[in-house]
Amino acid sequence: MHGVFNLSSDQGSLGTFIVTNVRFVWFADMNEGFNVSLPYLQVESICIRESKFGIALVITSTESSGGFILGFKVDPEEKMKTLYKELTSLHTIYSSKPIFGVEYKWCSSKNLPEQNHNLVEDFDAVEDTKNEIGNTIAAYLADEGHKDRPPVYNNELGLAIETLKEGYTLQKLWEVIPS
Image (cartoon, rainbow, N blue to C red; front, side):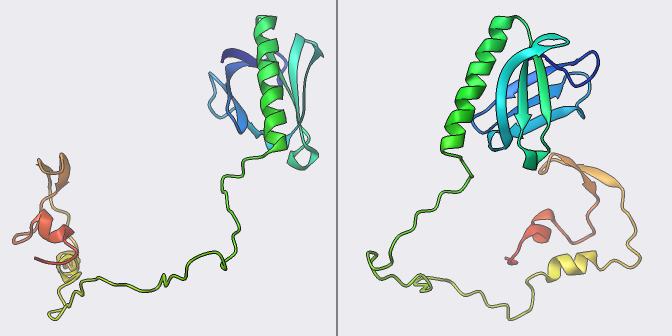
């Protein structure tokens, strides 16, 4: 919601108010360093009350999160009442069943079929008899004094890269297991 004033300064700061299912965010339109992001878990109360700017939406954070009193001015007043209803509804829902980001269900191992998760049935072993794995890049980087080479545009990557040393290709440098 654009056009929401944060009333923390003498004149208020114009910004954008965003409501999500876990938090609300307000940020100033002219100063991206001035912002508020508060999860519903840290909201103590939400109300509409009179301020020196007129009627304002007031959100108080919990004591453990700083006990801040945040005021926001939304015009017209109908929009503020709609925002108030949305925030109180989301805060109530979130408070009754918070979303912590991870869901874990306990279950008894007696009910599960026995499985051996450490058993690897099918795999291909890679033998490095010549000790080549990783040696291509190591040899490439073992440059005496490492002199920078001029950049050239590489069509394959779509960007400029340092000129490759003679005898090296991008594919050789990026291969984990040499072909």
